Image (cartoon, rainbow, N blue to C red; front, side, top):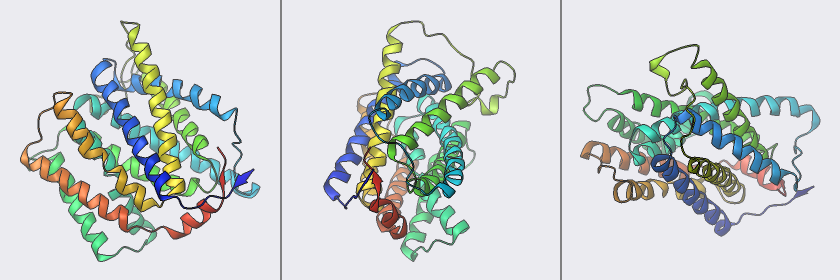
Length: 320
């Protein structure tokens, strides 16, 4: 059964803020309490997340809302979204264990810039002059973050760019997928892709050795203390719950509003990273770059009105 959904600004903002808090709690656990390879953290958190989502799906309807003739296309798109989401997650988990908290989040949040840029170049999506200027400012900010000296780009920054670009592609696919599937189904497919992809990479790490892409290929390390399993379970729970609330936020509030609210995550992680986790305060070039990216992303998100998708998606949504 489907239910009609109306715009609800307050509940959408509430879902978005709750998602931010849950994501931040998850990231603090990963950065502070887990000493495993990043791809292994992704594997464990995803497989535990699948169990949690699958249990919740048992009590809800998960059938697609598309016509039968479109289901094959929708499933292929779901697989593609899973692959892009896995690459973005693998890069994100690597960055969060190898660089500062706020830099990692800025890389992830800048996906909105690349998504707007790709939509403009590939699909001729109309952008205002202000939006084009905002994208340019954001790209300058990214350059300032990845290469503050203006000389070279380190490996972690390259991985951060992979996180941004693949995350943008995954976001673009979700904008179409949400016509066909509910929040839990999309998240479940994402977690399945993460589990298969990270498991494959762990196995391949014993066959190949490519240091330049070691954010993917890392050997399995047996956890030494049982407490880690509790942390991994908490990470999985927070990851699955935050994904659900983020998707639901986009379902009941305008895309631009949710996008703007989501950038509260940047100052929150800057505060948590510096004052709670002991990160260094960003150097002036990086700090200005962070401001550029954040401001430009807010401008792009707030001024984007995807009316066609909003009308289709918000008219009918599963009661999951």
